[in-house]
Length: 286
Ligand SMILES: [Fe+2]
Image (tube, rainbow, N blue to C red):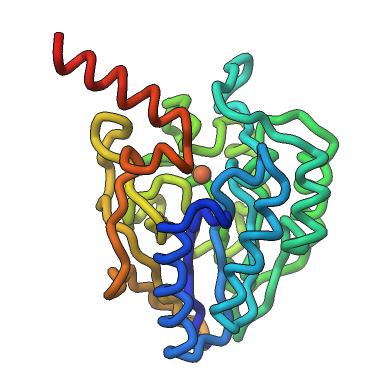
């Protein structure tokens, strides 16, 4: 079974460059005849603020002509706090938006049996929100995993951590420490083999405690060094996941025709970038 993996498409009718990149990805998906596409979230440019972008993104995504499974990102339904008592400067998780998301993209958590693999999609934006939705998801996961013994692959928008489960860094990039522990406890004793995430706009593959961790690049843009630390590879792209029997193979790929857009060049999509650019220019001048 051959699955295309894509992330952080940041689509909206007004985000014309990101939509142009997606059309290249869509053509590639059609040409390779994938069985399925899994989208790792940040589907929309800013569906969290403007729900109309959820439907706009879905319409643009249809050029792939292949079934797509989704997990939501911070730009789709708002963000979770990175740690207890930490306030966000971004749009906070919005339960109303989650309802709208579900109507358009389907369940925000799901599981799928492919050959001897149990593939799990989770809503990372709930972790640490202390909401009934977060509890529901943990309850769902507990019963979903009950009695399972096969290989497990996990898909969610945010990486679990930078390098290891014990990392103490508090950062919006990662699943917060307390829900991360809870999640890993539920998965302990299950045959977790890989965790695939988006969000960082950087491509990366590493092994921690015998589990493969894969960070998917964005199909839309990268974030320059002045705004974001480089941890993996800053390049747009996608990935291919192949599962057969108990084995799996994953390959990060840089697609031909995809433009390596820089977030700083897109203030028309993210107006806050215009202020940032101004501040950066002032800092350089002084
Ligand atoms: Fe994100």
